[in-house]
Image 1 (cartoon, rainbow, N blue to C red):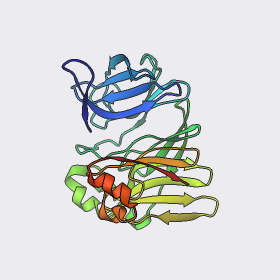
Image 2: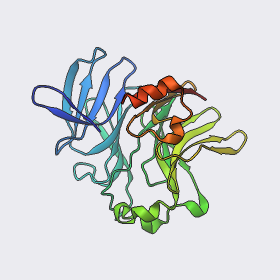
Image 3: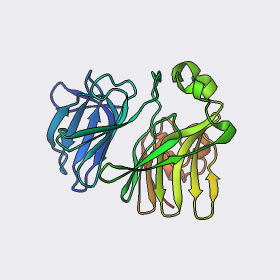
Image 4: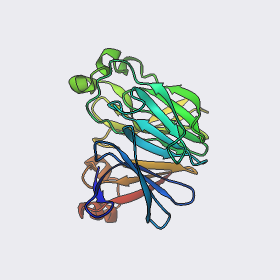
Length: 267
């Protein structure tokens, strides 16, 4: 997470962001004791900001302009103990749903984000292998359960992620993102000491696992999925050797110069 100026003397811890169809940018700031939401117009001029009465990790703007927040497990503000909050764009009409497991002690950050494709929004917060699918109004439509059999993280280890993190590394769980498309699902997972991109073909009932890497794999850091394309970026600080060797020389040179690379992959 990086900090950037929002005005004279102000700083932001960019937790997440999303764009509307008309080019507005919503930035979620987790820098202060209370999170804030900044709204910029299509010309990147600041329209305003709102102090939030809750702590959130991620935000998604639906097609009808509603806001969907993924709340923090350590949220001690409004809607404590809830995972999802749906509001209007003025943050007045609020509806919270989905409960965190009782007794969960999550004091470490495990990155995730909303995925979206077409009319659906996908939510999965590690270390839960259930993916909740919402429509573009923010209404829950479906829950997808991913079962990895003997590699599922035992329930007793999930209650204290920090204390059990080294043991958890021996198992497999969803991590970072999942999106659906016409033939199946594209997502990422942590798998016994490394990261994998996976692709499920629901028409042929096939599962394809990418090579295990130290970081997010050949896609890099996933940003979004639309019209059959996955958009991601490669971070020079985290790109692994396994990923590096498959890249064109000019891309390698760019990364070695400590520059980011945007990547577009067709599925």
